[in-house]
Image (cartoon, rainbow, N blue to C red; front, top):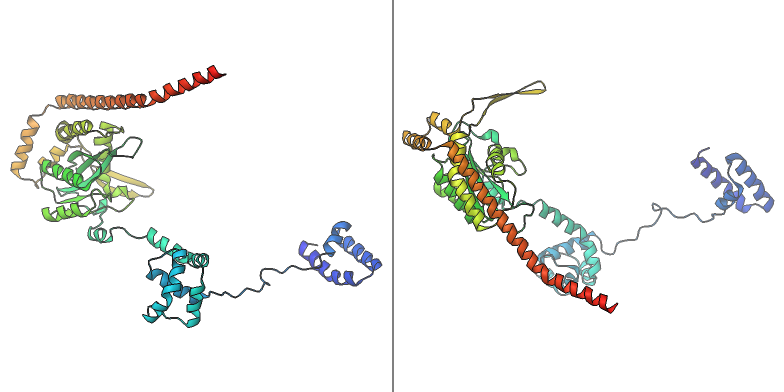
Length: 412
């Protein structure tokens, strides 16, 4: 016999149990215990539960004093007065409900108006909880700068024509170390999709004007004309100042999808090989470090990478079953790719050839290493100064602490 059957069996015997004599009650208990194999004392307690508690389903629901019609008018008034809290809205309901009815901003009966005037602040807050949650959700999923985002088209890496010179991918690499607080150097990195020509610029902070100036400096150093530049969704480049610059210079301006790094896959590769592997992950936040990085980016590093570092480009990709078959072209430097292209003029090619013939790759490498050593020395000196300043701040407190400890020893 299962639990439900035992319960039904007890319910049928309970009526006889309460009406019976002492002897009859004993017989009923004996019968129940014999059939269910339960202990006698436990069964007596179960039989003596005379009052059957009401379940939630059987409870009579209390009618709401402030029904849906009242709440609907309450929400309208709440929105009119710019979403005040319950305490402020309580005062507003008492004084402004009739005025709003006169101006026909709200339509409600006299009964609803009287109920609104009687509402207290705690009740108001409870009744508006749902509306507040809806507002929070709308704010969470609201698109910021929707006009600018809708104006700038979205492009993925597959949307670019990889055979055209002048399509640039742009990104920033932070040199903040282990902490993103304060102002620090941001490394602007730009890569041409066709030739893999790279340009870099160090900028202090994330200001829009500084980012725009760095972008313009890189564009002036590039040996060919830009047609389009493509940053991610960072606000240092995705803003109205850069948008106006693109319109003024006749450049196309596109952006990648949020949280899709592969849309900027070409520049993401250069961020690793041309920035991180060169300057590392330390924090640079002084003017000396900024000048040293710009000397490196504007001179030896760009010449060394663009004229003497071959790049292997992907020609095609095909899925065969569960495998992807890739084909790559021959490794060539960005300089060679531009020289073989018919999209730049002979004058530009002659200028590139003149620069190439004047360069010694071994000397360039030595100069790069020297500048990096100098950068690290500046960083070590800065850390030394910070440690000295920290020690100077700690010395007075250490002296006072030692005095206090001596006084305690003398007192004891």
